[in-house]
Each structure stands twice: as C-alpha cells, then as structure tokens.
Length: 205
Figure 1 (tube, rainbow, N blue to C red):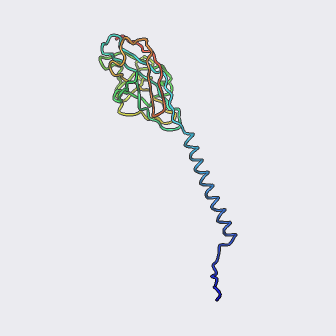
Figure 2: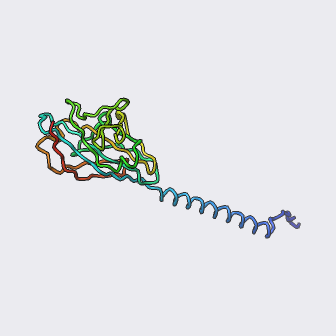
Figure 3: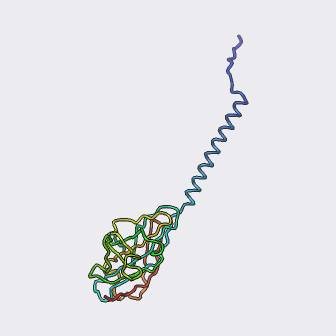
C-alpha cells in the first residue's frame, strides 16, 4: 500500500526574501531611533554657575548674625532647581532664602551689596512688594534693586536664566571672629554645583 503524501503550499522564495528585507529595515530603523534618543538625552546637561558670592557678619552681635548672597545661572540644557545652600556643612532652610529670578543682566553683573543692618532681621532696605530689597548701586532707588520674595522651596531656573539669592545664615554658623576668614559655601541644583571658598566680610552696625 502506498502512503499518500499531503501537498501543502509553502511560502515562495520571493515572499520570504521580501519579509526578511522588511523586518531588517524595521529593526534597523528602531535601533537608529533608539540610539538617536540616547544621544540626544546624553548631550543635554544639568549645570549651574555660581558667581559673586558674599558672606557678611555683624561685627558686634553676639549671636552671630550673618547673611550671604550669590548669583546663580543655569548654564545647562535642562531646567534645574537650586535646592541646597550650605555654609560650613550646615544647610540654610528655604524659609531663610530670598531669591529674585526676574533680574536684568545689568543687575546680575553688578557686585552684590549689603546695605546695612536692621535689628535682628539683618538687611536694611525695604521696598513695597518685596520681602527683601537690596540696592546694588547703593543709591537707594529701585532701579538696581534686588526685589526678592520669601523662599518656600527650591528655586527653578530655565536654561540661561539667572537669579540672585540672598540668604540668612543660621545664627552662630559664623561669628564676628570669622571676619576675614575663608569659609566654604556650597550651592547645588541636584547634582550640579559644588563648593567655593569665600572670605567673610565684617559689617559694622
């Protein structure tokens, strides 16, 4: 008895070749897109530059009344948030930050000033609508003032955006004995940023 062979249609050689080619193209395109995405995300950086940092200490206050100020600019490609300011390893609470993120390039490039003491609070100049206002040209008008709001959290900066942040140190972090002494100030936005050395300036009442 002869065994009957069943006839089944097989995929033609041409169709097989077409399928292989299409699959190769699709897979190749996926690899290229994935690689491009990784490259683009890898080239975007988080970076900040910190400039003009000053530290001032009251020369006669026994509780170590002191303030600081820094200019911070987002020099990277991503939005960053300045989330830590440390003096001698001690974090400055957000409630003691006074950031101004709407400053002009002219104000940002000027030297940061201390315009006098006012009781136990610290800064002297007061301008309506500002939690803290400090004249950068020391004339006293509002033209070159830093008009800062009271801090409540990290300071967000778009790429290229700059801010000036005044901050009140925790009493006793530095004292009048530190006048003229170099002190470490660290400012971070996530992993971006780092420490810098600043000489403490004694300011008489």
